[in-house]
Length: 146
View: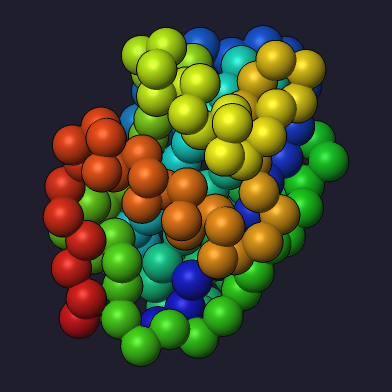
């Protein structure tokens, strides 16, 4: 099993409709290939965690890299994992711009800002810590190893 994390800059300002479209476009393929994870988005950036088999994650990432909705793609990690953190999630999408102001302020204080938006970390451990912080406050599904 593998986990891939990347971040990128959007080519135009995005909203929840954009996130929803992305998730709907990839839902069938992700289910067929048992790919799970989470897509986070601010109005100007994406951060995505993908978990699954090597070939499926690799193929998915190359398809994502060609998507014209983003640029400045930065691979954060692509590692072998003992178990999935997002097994029960399928693929979830979260628009960070929709969070309540106190959560957004806490995340910006802890992880930094980029032109007023939450800055997505460039390190795997910080990325997973941020997702855990969001999970704890936002009531996301439990992570299950296995």
